Amino acid sequence: MSQALEALLDLLDLEQIEQDIFRGQSRFAVVPRVFGGQVAAQALVAAGRTVPEDRFAHSLHAYFLRAGDAGAPIVYTVDRIRDGRSFTTRRVVAVQHGQPIFHLSASFQTYEEGMEHQADMPAAPDPETLPTAAELLPRYADLYREQGVVERLLEAREAVDLRYVDAPPFASVGEAREPRSQVWFRANGKLADDPLLHVCLATYVSDMTLLDSVLLAHGRGGWVTGDVVGASLDHAMWFHRPFRADEWLLYDQESPSASGGRGLGQARIYTQDGRLAVTVIQEGVVRVPR
Image 1 (cartoon, rainbow, N blue to C red):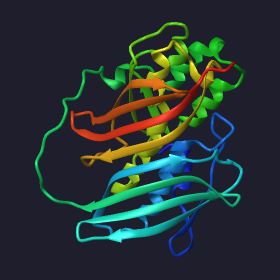
Image 2: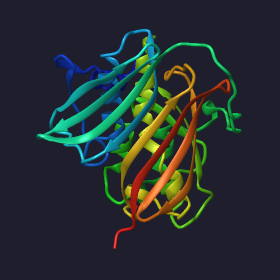
Image 3: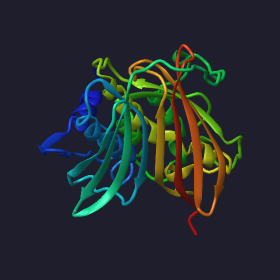
Image 4: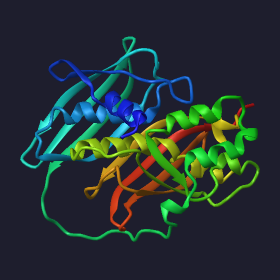
């Protein structure tokens, strides 16, 4: 396991300070605020710590309320909304400096048999044939808005091996493309068998690239090049089938709409053998600086 992955797992290992109250730390990301995927993953950890072990996360719905301060701890308060015979519902509020910065509702279910069908996995190249972040990102250093961006991007993604199928938006500035993107990802090391851990790792990664397809439709590079100002607004995930976040997962993303200073991304996450594991939808602020 890489040191970066160990550090990420430490971030997800929340401190319990009272019944249903947890405290998490942060690390500085590539932008001067807490990375949204970190808050979402930590909130899901907090919810999962209050749920019976035989129930697995099947969905989450969240709102990003305020920018998080990476230099201060985050307190997560869990409300035990309902414990039914098959489903458990939890609500989590993340607080910093006395104010809520994030709100999450999550649902957990006992395993049961049911009807089965899924959308087919789209075509994608073998992830092992694609360049790593360390190979790809320095190629575009002259496009970045400030020095040090390459190093910060690499540090932020060191815990996860994330590989673009096509050129990322910051490599396509001025060239409008189909609003669709694909990345392969997996944790950079072997993980324990805890299903909640794998779901939380996927939640963490899901906020990294989902709005890329919005940028591609307009030939914008995003915060990396400084031609767009953005932030996540809300985030929803449905976990359909078991998966491992330390094995390759295809993140197939597209944007059906952008308007009113907001952009919508929707995506499906597939295992390498073609099973649909997760569906993701996110809306974010996408503003062009004036």
